[in-house]
Image (cartoon, rainbow, N blue to C red; front, side, top):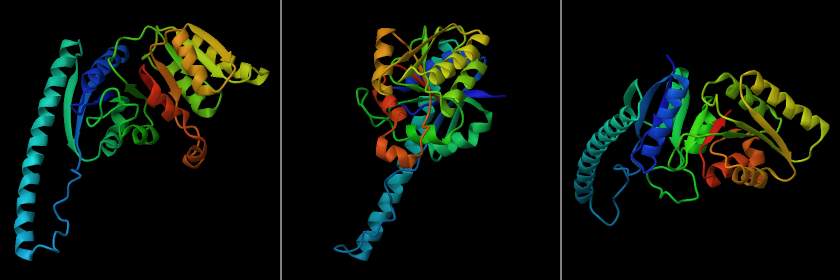
Length: 283
């Protein structure tokens, strides 16, 4: 049975991630798994502390550091359990029926990869536990998750409310066509008005691609408003989003190679950083 995985870390966004995942579970008729990853601590206890201190002092200090690490690991484990218990209680109160708690050691991305086969959607906060809510940045895992997983990813950027519409950023390339196909085949956004937006020149070829994408969605029951607007991708999408009060954005992710992105930047990353509405990332 496939399920939705909500990445819970105890940060300020955890409650919003849980709210978003409950909404998604209801929309898709899926069970919900609350995942907390206990990642390796950045502090090491096996550094060479010799030098100005003698070997005996170094050995004593290492023993103390090992004991401290063991205590911290135990506290982190207990804290994670409490975070999951609270998230589950919140999810149940919000109406989720099938909710599981899962605590795993190791890297979050590796854990998600291990669970990918049984996953239909991953919900994650844009910021991790080490960031403030108003930070214009992304958590350390966001780009790795988006580049590595082949499942849809719903990114919560703040307080989550049930969206009344959504926008698809469409450019006619393979990543965008894959996003259209995934949206058309999923119940996640069904029933919501769809704004299909393309930035750039309105050529016959691009217009034909846009109309083809619109037809695919309409055949699956979506109400679609399509538009081609002149200009660069980021400012066009931002302006359209503001003018039409869009409440969720969907887009294909990282269509270019990492080498190209090094020189020209990534529209995907820029949208994730700057967006004030949830984003659905599809590869």
